[in-house]
Length: 85
Image (cartoon, rainbow, N blue to C red; front, side, top):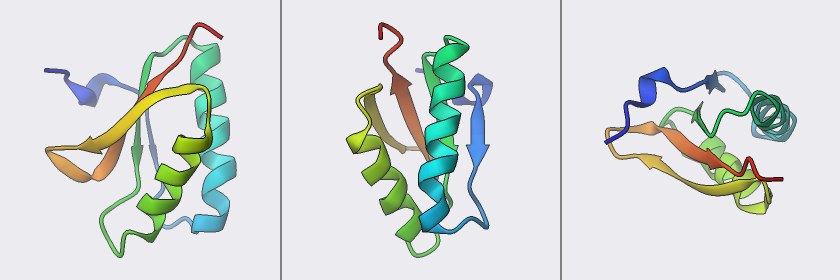
């Protein structure tokens, strides 16, 4: 079991879905440069609109190996980055 609290996080609370792409893309770029294999994106529970947008962004990004909702906190997504590229 991973202790996700030690991984880098970005909190998207209060952000709009339309701005999520830039924020998530830059966050992933920065952490690939830093060689961090795992990151956490906090989108909150709410209506699910922001979560859906984040998951769409992650599904299209070839630098993301896998992602899934944290089973202990459905308001955040756990992301495994591909550091080989």
